[in-house]
Image (cartoon, rainbow, N blue to C red; front, side, top):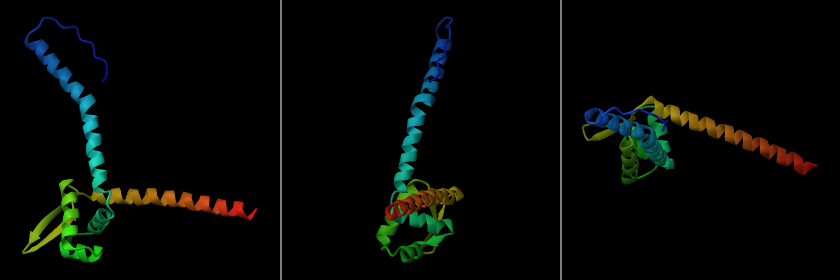
Length: 142
């Protein structure tokens, strides 16, 4: 937290108000970032299962029913529902009912953007790995 120096004049309500302001600033500078990091960690934990990534990839291209997701993932209904519940709890997906069917979609286009960035990062890593493999092969020929 940045250092703040304030000379107090008197006491009472004004001092109490200043204390309240300082406590809010302490919260903003000390507590909020750690809570934000915890939320980010929770988000990445939700993305930490291959089936959930695949569900998000499918939903990024458009709305799907639970049955369509089951067929595409080759998973049973309880497993798909469990993954969808985890994604729904993190506000990554939402659903709507139509008769007896539930249809899911991503809540924000940013989910697709996040997946795109992840693919790009992996692509760079794999490109670097291929370059290293070629260098190792050249070294072995010497």
